[in-house]
Amino acid sequence: MQIKINLKIFLFLIVFLITKQIKIYAILMLFAFIHEMGHIIMGILLGFKPESISIIPTGFSVKFKAQYENYNIKIKKANLLSIKKIAIASAGPLINAVIVIITIIYYRTTNNFYIMNIPLDLIIYSNILIFIFNLIPIYPLDGGRILKDIIHIYSGIYQSYIITNKVSNIVIILLTMISSVIILIYKNIAILLIIIYLWILVMNENKKFNIKMKIWDKYNQINN
Image (cartoon, rainbow, N blue to C red; front, side, top):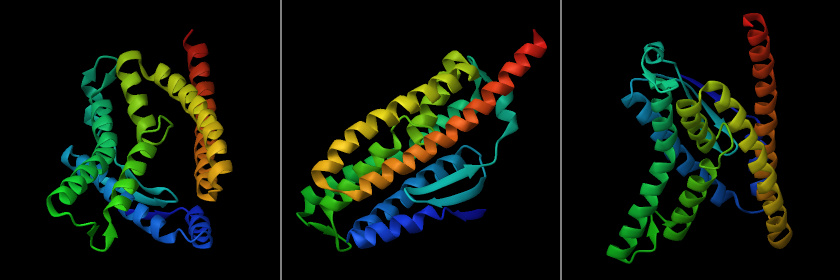
């Protein structure tokens, strides 16, 4: 399995060092790794083989080798692969939700404010943040992947691309507006970095979307 490093992570490290939030970033990356292990374990359980794992500024990203036999089993307007993709994408946020629940139970039964010298409130905060962030309906975040495959099942692949792309663009605009207010109030440059990173993701996906639409249009012209 290949391991890739996105060089933008070093920019995040520098910013968090300057703002004296490196401990928080390190804890976020720890639980982001555990989050990604949820994806990997679910993928392996469903018969997929991890092909590569990338270290990105907001955590980790795993890529699996496709199982071509899944394309032969139809699920409405998609195939079995879409169901498995939804399960894999959901596994990561589910892990974070479970960690939050276990942490709360641990505190209520022990009255201990720390686990391995990490404050419980920081563990809960980190996992809630990762849970919410990854379920944002922006492709290729988990929320965007889940949305895309659900639409694929009920409306087909063409509509899944169009609707997911529109939702991603609307959401990033709304997030930018909300984050601008938060940045002005709290002066937190880390939020600005995350928004910039999300914009990069959306713009890259927009380029891919436009290429796919052009190919789709040419295909339709040839067949019509």
